[in-house]
Length: 325
Image (cartoon, rainbow, N blue to C red; front, top):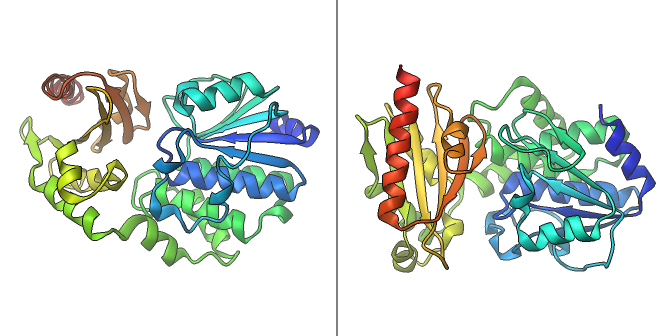
């Protein structure tokens, strides 16, 4: 199944691994799993993130974080994009290195609305990119899966399944997670650190945001906002918004949950989307040039708050009325 990328990997020496912007647990975990696995195979591996400071503190249990952006070469034999549904998801600087300094290219991804921007796209519609990598590692040489690789992959699966609570969790997902635990992974610690634990400041942001939640279109849509003043008043940053949207989609009757987070430099907003009851979050995000999965996706809107909210609500009505028809 992975013959083409396997042939590439065994014929090269220097490999550059690229994360997507604002990397989540699956992206960081999968990237570092590749680093540890390929390093064990004797490859020279370099890992890049567009902005390392965007990596959330709850991922500090991952082994190998210190190698990210630690060193650059002038050329690489192979560049691998991880968890990236499009070239733009790597960010401008990483994309330049990926296409400008890498002699060959590949991508591991699981996003339904992605685009094939490289010839060797390893895509599967599964819960996490980490799930794909585990199967890839096993098919090639399972002997190089050690405790570090296992921890990175397990964390990736945990975060992209919401601690195995999202509907992307399948029997294969649970089987792979079970096998990874056999390498000595502390499953409870991973779930606690990445899903449950939060700082007092993040708790204050959550309380403030949910208290101001809006429920529209007969309660079918729930919207929360994260504005600059919210971060100032609670001593938080945009990294502390992770997971709050899940409280909104869990409300009975809500079919589409939307989080609108103000970006720093431009009149622009990062939009997170969750859905249930058959509503397609990926289709909704695509209306704004975004993408993702059927029940979890995102996009960016370059407009002021009033226009952004108006566009989101009008599109939500369009999507929901289409689903109801």
